[in-house]
Image (cartoon, rainbow, N blue to C red):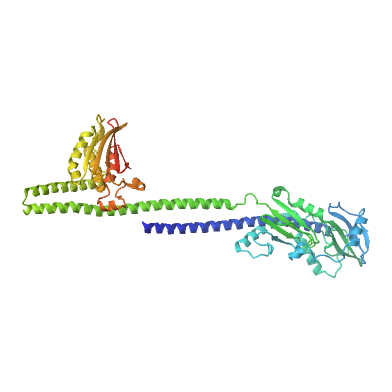
Length: 583
């Protein structure tokens, strides 16, 4: 059994290690998938902000050479005004009604472009323009599209990128072009015809394409210039008929940020995402809090601006709770399975061990009376015993050993038949006292030869009970023999047999005054082939089937058997038989 316990402990440890590794791997995969989904949503939200800014640039570049003081369309809330600067930097034209404010901003600003010379959070971190960086794990140092990632993660991002490009395909199908194509078109036009005068290009935006009515003009792309912490100027060079000027518009940064927030964080994202923006000069983003925080530095010409997006855990995205619950359930099922398997195997092994011990005990128990019978018979046969008294003693010994051998053989045969279900009891309803006294008279000689006194206590007027005479005798033989065997060292050498009434029949009790049975082993005394591990058990030989046979015979007759330690000392077995009215 010790070896069996060690093997089961090793198997349990291996199974728990495997389950732990499986749960750990599942949690890692679930966490990776969860982060990828949030990364995709964050990238898409920030891309929409980038797209809005690209649409703004595309719309401005498509305006043509309209004079600043004669706007062709209503201005957005964040546009402070428009202006035109001559070759010497002098203000030649401004939006109507904005003259004083625009002149103050333009004359007080640095004339050099601010692109690439940031002093705010993006310049200090040297984040590339047009990139997104996660501020929470895995890292705040690498953009999403530049960081090293496992192959499966890269594939997931490629799929998500294709899904994003699906929106652009749908836009083209409706006659629109994308901001990306605007940028590509501008680069190719200025690279191929850098020194040639040309007509203004057709408008390329997410609005239907339309061509300006101005010809013979060369327009450069818009670039940004920082006027102060709250204002940016978008400018471009204009060459018309040998005259060069700069046209631009002034944008108020806070209203621009409010416009971007309203454009992107509505609908399903309401309450699930929040965004903070960073201005162009020495602007500070708030400390990143939350599990999913992302920072975007916008692409040129708005690379002086950036956004920090905080996502709440998105609904419908699996968490570790389900995996942990399944892992706990798996551990519980595995533990129960191992426990059941251990109990089953332990029972089988223990039963096999007890059966082997039973075979050895039966061999010894059979050998002992046979040896005595053979010895006494040979001495009588050879005339060695001359005394008549000695011959009578040997004859009695032969009878006792024959009875002992007969009881042992009967026990084994009876138990075997009961286990196979082949024993059919001939039950009848009759008084129990005559059958009990007959069995006790047969046993009295054996009990007295062991140095015990047989005490019988039978209550008067007992009701009849359902039993089989031979089965009752077998029960009495086993109980009395068991009491005499295990109480040999007792100071009070008595075996008390009592018979009394119960509400449902009669109860037979057999008690000794020996040491009793340890409390933790009381539930095992009726198990087949079980014998206690005490020194008394080792000294008192037996087969281990006596009490098991008692319970099986009692139950076969519709009764029951119980055992307990008597007070102040001793061991008592009760066998209850059903009354004559029991079915």
